[in-house]
Amino acid sequence: MVRSPSVPRQTGRYHITRAAEEEVCAFVPFPLPPADPPLAIDGPTCNLHTAAMTEVVRLAVAGSVVPSPDWFLYGFVLKEAVVTSQMEGMQATFQNVAAFEATRQSDRLEGVLEICNYVAALEHARARRTDCRSASACCTRHTAF
Image 1 (cartoon, rainbow, N blue to C red):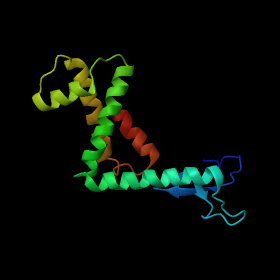
Image 2 (image 1 turned 30 degrees about the vertical axis):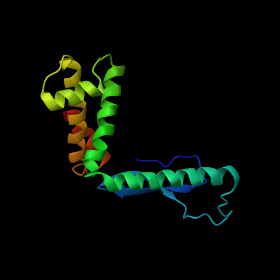
Image 3 (image 1 turned 60 degrees about the vertical axis):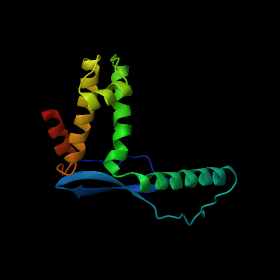
Image 4 (image 1 turned 180 degrees about the vertical axis):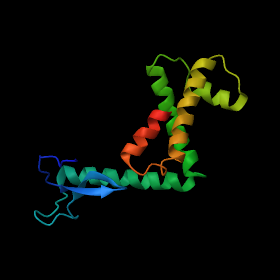
């Protein structure tokens, strides 16, 4: 049986519901903008809001010039895979992986293949993310890999 967290939230409430034949605890936010007290964007909050909106515009511009969202995400995924493998002791770099993808040759083959496996695993998960109808189904599927 799922239980609702006992700590009250100022931004919403918890609600027990069913999703794909599984009982879940959902967070339901209060409507925006807040009415009581009304939302006040001034001082430092206004500066942060302006900076955030500027970055959203920059992201929108970047998104409009890339050939595909998958291509856009690939660089970030690859960089994350490189950093993760380096934390685990692998010596391959972003440049090593890019060169391997172009030539299929590398002097750091073990590390490059590990990074390529990370990327392939994430691409596999992204391609099948709609297959999981519930959190428990996803966890069960994850343990199979």
